[in-house]
Length: 100
Image 1 (tube, rainbow, N blue to C red):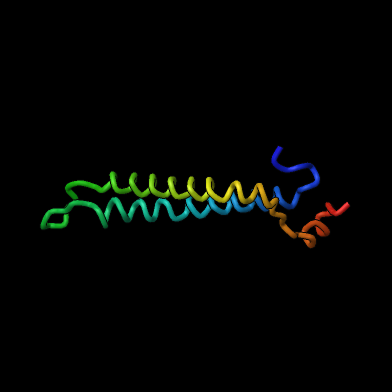
Image 2 (cartoon, rainbow, N blue to C red; image 1 turned 30 degrees about the vertical axis):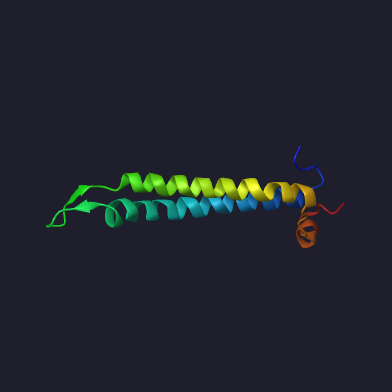
């Protein structure tokens, strides 16, 4: 088990970071993907009509992003486990009544 039953603040902090990352990615992903495929990397003729969209570059952008996230997850993980980071959220504990 990653967190014991007494470590509510660490679990809350982890879920907060996870949901923040999901929400940021779901907001900016379609914006950057759409700009990349339709405007920046699309092949257009002289009249401005799109001949070919740049979907391969959007997939490349996503795969590079996933690889970077994997590296961020992989390398500091052993350091986090070794040091045992603790989140100091005493005010949150007191507010929620978990300081028993």
